[in-house]
Structures are given as C-alpha cells and as structure tokens.
Image (tube, rainbow, N blue to C red):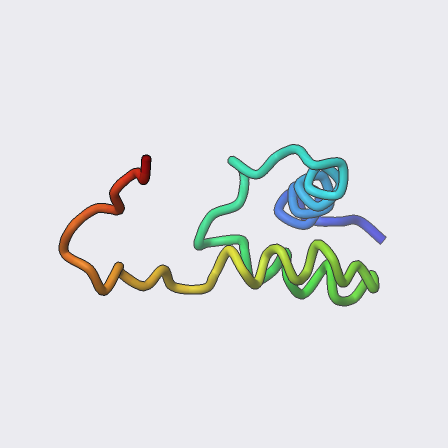
Length: 70
C-alpha cells in the first residue's frame, strides 16, 4: 500500500520529535494529524507534548514585567 507524501512527512516529523528534533516542523496545519499519529502508535509522551503545543498561551495578569530580586 502506497503512502501519500503528507503521510510520509508526518511519519518523518514524528520520528524527529521522538529524538528531540524537528520542533520547527510542527505548525497549525499538521499538529492535529501528528497528535493522532502519536496516539495511534501509543507514544503518549510525544502526544502530550504536541497537545501542550496547541494550548493557548494566556497573557500575564500583571501589566508590569517581573522584577529581579536582589
């Protein structure tokens, strides 16, 4: 059975992520497919990391930047 170029790319991206590489290849267009692929393969760590990637960042409640303490 032949695989599509997109599926091959997702497999390669997932392999890189599992080695701690390839984070720059994850984007809004492929993250959900990568999550599904990681889940299907039982890779809970990579799945969780990808789910965290999709989580919205909340703005700081403080208007002032944090200050260093002496």
